[in-house]
Image (cartoon, rainbow, N blue to C red; front, side, top):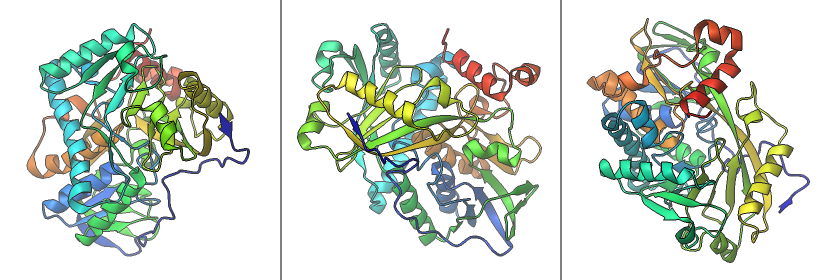
Length: 429
C-alpha cells in the first residue's frame, strides 16, 4: 500500500474547474427562492419548475460544492438508516412508505441521467453491506425478511458464497440491494444545473444568503422577495440561525487511488463491480469508478463529530489503507486524491423537513444523509407546498422530540449531545 509523499490535501477527485453562473447583483421578486445548490436544492428547483413556477436558486459557492459533490457517489435506498431501522422506529407500514419515498429519489436521479443524457460516470452497481462480525448476520436476515414483506428484493450471502462476488475471506456474509448505482455527484449537479438553466430557472452561484426575514432574502449585492422559500443548506443551517440546537454535522474522508488494471479490479470484484460498505459503527465503504479508480472512505469516532473540518489526514489515511490491506492483501494501491466532507446530521440520524413554525411559507430540507433521500425530499418540498402532500410530515418534522435536548444539551454541549443521541438511536451500548 503506497502513498504519494505529496498527496494533496482537500483535492476532490470529482471536481473539474467549475463554470460559475454570475452572482445575483439585482433585486428581484420570484415565486420560489431556493437556498442551496446540492442534490436537494436542485431537485426542488426541478419540481417547482415542472409545476410552472418562476424559480431562483442561490448557491454560496458552485452547485455540487458541498456535501453532495464531496460524497462518494453511492445512490441507493439504504444510506445511514435501513428499512429495519425505520420499522423499529415506527412500524413496517410506515417504513414501507419511507422506503418508497427514498426509492423514488433513486429513480428520479436515474431518469434524469437517461432522459437527458447526463455525462456523470453513471454505473449500475448493486449495493453490498458486508458483515464484520458473525452476529451482524442476524440483522441482515431481519432486513432481508422485511424487504421481502414489502415487495423489495435483496440477496443474502454467507461467508462461503460471498467470495464469488467480493474476493476477501475476512467478511462473515453480506446483504445485497439491487436497483442501485454510482455516479460522479459533482458532474450530476453540473448537468442538472445546465438543464434547469435551459428551462428558465435562474441559478446564481457565488451568492450566499446572509439573512432571511419573512419573505425577503439578503445576499451581498441584492435582496430577493419570494412567495415561497425552500432552505436546502444542510450542515449550514446554524449559519442562518435556523434549527441551531438540532442540526450538527458528521465528517467523512474519501481517498481515490491511481487507476487499477482490469486484473486488479477483478481481484476485488470477481463478478462485476459493486458499491460496498461494512457494518462497523463508523463504517468503511468502497467502489470503483468508470476509469478503474478505487474510492475508499470512512472515518473514526474522533473526527466524525469534530466541531470543525479536520485537515490532518495522516491518521485517517493510514487507518483506511490498513483496513483495505487487511481485507484485500492481494491489492497494492497508490492513492492520488484525498478529501473530507461534512454532512448535516440530526440527533436521530433521520432527515428533517417541514414548514417553519412561525413562517409557513418557509420550508426546510436538511440532514438528508444520502443522495437518494436528498433528491426525494427536494421533490417532496415542492409537492408539499404546491400540492398539499403531507405523508412524510409527521415522521421527519424539524420540531420532533429528540433523545437529548434542552437543559441537558446546554450542560453537555452540542457535540456531545449529538454523539450520545446518535448512539442511542443506533442502539449502541
